[in-house]
Image 1 (cartoon, rainbow, N blue to C red):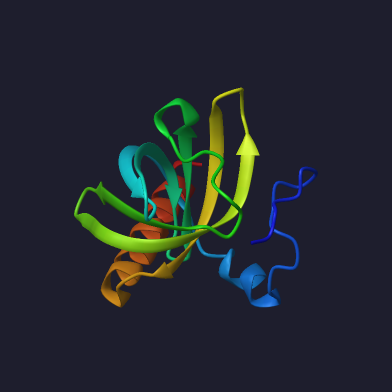
Image 2 (image 1 turned 120 degrees about the vertical axis):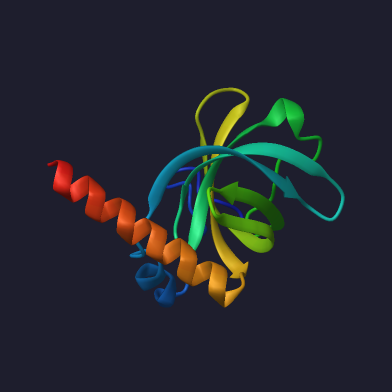
Length: 135
């Protein structure tokens, strides 16, 4: 399993295709989510989501598996209004320490239903349009 660079907080040698995936529109939000590994389940807070991935905050005092290794696969469950993701598989691609126990985790979706991916993309586009009209 690869280790995350302490300088960039990212996995080394990520495929070039990842750069284009990260251009998806993101919607900022703050909702609780449930994440799980093969051996543990833990709470987190969703801070943004796109059709290609999400960012979450985790407090390691609630995570008995810590540290989560780079490239780890995690299942997630979350609800944002009418979008209900009951199970999607993610891969950890970025980890940033915010304090002694708080970390920001960046994930890419490995497995996500196509309808959910389209719904997330549409919601992020709508949020961007609303934000643009305000400015």
